[in-house]
Image (tube, rainbow, N blue to C red; front, side):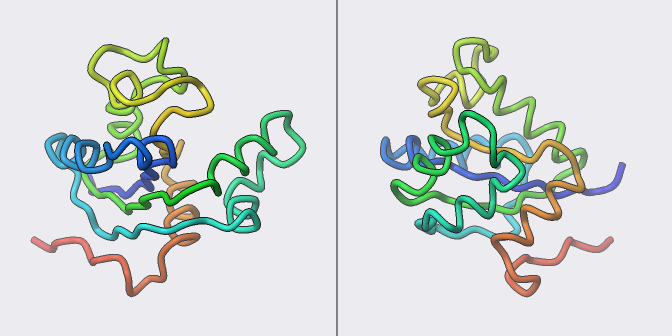
Length: 144
């Protein structure tokens, strides 16, 4: 199986609770390699741009307000089957429904403040990584 990349965002709620380090450590324990990482504070316009596909949906304004309220940690992660594995490790969107031991179960409070964002498919991951990182900012994959 080939290496794949996914975007991870540690959201404002987890950053405010100082759980980013524990989340990054967990991801590394799960076999992810951090290829790029930065701490940023999104403007409202940047959050709107990132979540543009949700514009017009009932939760859009709340989501954009939340994502721009305080800093986030964005990472480009790599491993085999990265998108699916990341989604498995973070758990269901609603922490109350997430499996025991998943990141959202451990660190999320509710559907809106659920600690992390993850790409839903490889094509989305590529677009999302490019939204936050210039090509030169992402470390190349190891070659055999």
